[in-house]
Length: 258
Image 1 (spheres, rainbow, N blue to C red):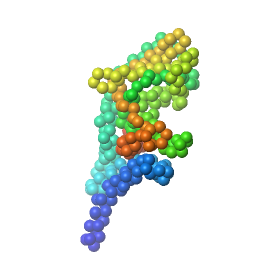
Image 2: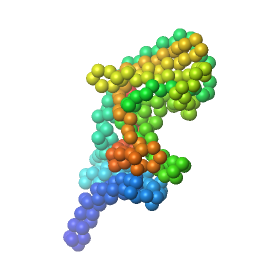
Image 3: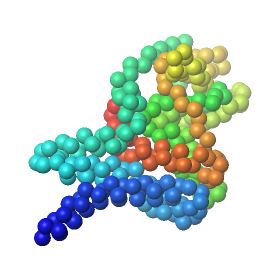
Image 4: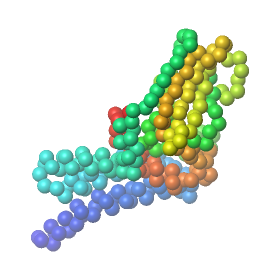
């Protein structure tokens, strides 16, 4: 009887972390080009959910080591937050406590319409509206019938602008004259890190409105490899997604927007 109890205790102690480690390995493998079509199918079937499952497993494991239902529930909730934020906890706290300095200047009104040309200055860095989220996101590519990675619209400032103006209303048009109104987007790095984001609305008479926001976090635009994953730093991106691409992190980042 004692032996059975000891075995059960060991299972409770080792089971969840071992399961989490196994799922992490499955996730990275399924995103790696070496896994081929089988890995891509595995990812599409179950892999996408793994970053959300692992924090729950670890939180349940830690809570099970405590006594008392109230203590277990409290420990579970706290550890779920910590396990979900992990290495991006400072970025999450910074996002929640930041007080961005913004400035609007409107010269004349422009009638709002659907579909704005969006002109972006060349930059090797991306401004982040939600720096606690992964820098990349995964997508299914119809051109190569494979998985591909892109700069995360959820994390990026440009994604936030697209959400503000309406989904898909900002059409990337780097050089198409005689189409008004259009928006231009520029980054100016600041001393000590971060950048000033400037968005201008242009009409036929020139700049109709200007928006500045200072102290916006910056990140290097990651190598996403185009179609497929062979040209990307796959392991680094997979680890970033594994650690931070959970529904819990998305909810916390949305709620704690500074």
